[in-house]
Image 1: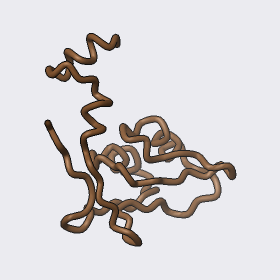
Image 2: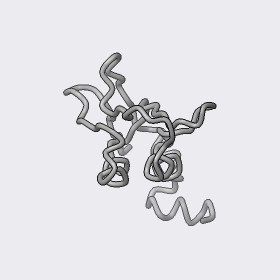
Image 3: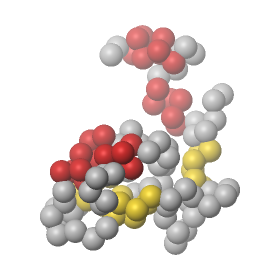
Image 4: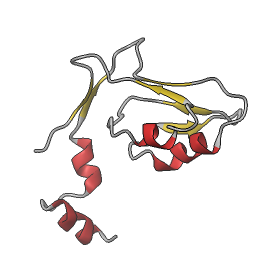
Length: 105
């Protein structure tokens, strides 16, 4: 997609990345809303999260395990859908006042 097409898709002349940058995230220190269950070898579903998460919260570390950095999570549920059958993650809504704050300005 070209920059012009991306800007037109949002209807504001801004690129999607610029719109996402407007969002804010309040981290609930010590109480992550997503946890990955311990694994020696990541499942196909966990590996898929490293590419499918729109916020880029999942990555593979040096030891080959998938880890999550939830700062910036959009709470879209993509990870819940992908791992529904495997149960690789535990996902809960953040406590009130924490998590993503969408700004549409």
